[in-house]
Image (cartoon, rainbow, N blue to C red; front, side):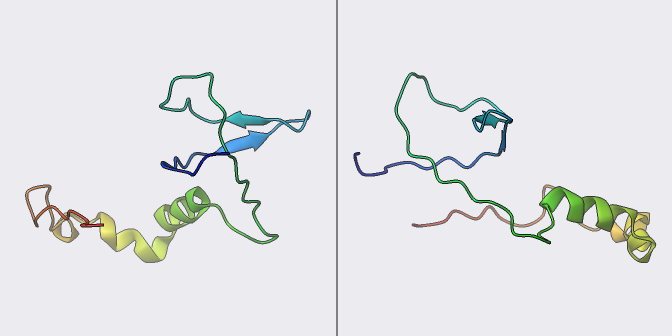
Length: 84
């Protein structure tokens, strides 16, 4: 197989027939061969969406919904361009 030149991160589900079912279409035209690396969650790992859901429902963080906490806008700051 050729050297990897581009990587795309996406999520998928392993179906009953042990095939990957992608959650979203890939932004490339096919057919094309690709290299796939599957990262399986460890027992006890929490998905990012679960963390976000827990944080948004946590009464200890309810103060963040107050209007005075909304101090930033899209006009604040400067764009960051990674120079890699």
